[in-house]
Image (cartoon, rainbow, N blue to C red; front, side):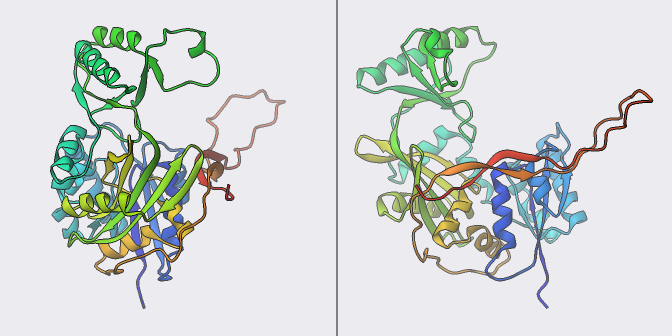
Length: 373
């Protein structure tokens, strides 16, 4: 009898409820039990898991590793998919292996390269993968100089933190003065240069930003599955152009993604993003973890999460080629259940009925595939 597989996802994106769904619907028909932890008790991943815990706040990297090891032992975890404190966890991979847990993440050297975008761009450019022009800025004067140089070349400027994920801190720079245009309609990523300069000058600490030209669509995210032998098992590009999404196997995207994944040992699941700079695809970002949209490959007949778990367990799925490419689609928000909660005890008048605990509520913070466009 084949035993069930116990998988743990720590503090991860809400979209990974779909990652969990795919593990359960695996083509091997293997029983999978999922443990999830998160700092937010209302994260839908906690409700989607078979067992769940709320993570303690404020742990140092070393303390988080101890917490993670304890979770693996107490919960009998076979495969750990870390997002939170990934760098600290992979540095202690042998300790997790000693308690019977495989860590589904790249080795520490690979994670370290892509934690800092400057180091990443320099390393990737050295192996021949094109990157956009960039300037690392720490002061208002450096920011203005970088923006002016980009504008002199006919480009629009944007900036993002030198380290970070998920598009947090990304802004487009405009010369338009602050006006009612910025206060009507929906919030925008566009910020006036003079206000940015003022904020940087008034900040208590230097910023650490990359200033770059605004890159053009399409955006192509290549999902890669790489074995511990540094050999690619799967690479598929997901295209994004406005609302329209699709898939591609074109080598102009896959070849540089494979060069990065294999060249830097991005074992298991990684996501490598490109955009256009003029007529050239250039690297935008590298994620050493599964992408939030990885589940969309199911539209191509591929279950990437399960193939990655197989690799982590030493069961090589072999080279995987999508049997077909799904047609274009878009994504829409949809409800997911949350864990049931009870209202705090409230004092009520004797004549008033005591309110019942509310039924489980739904969340609309995750996305799912919609009908084709």
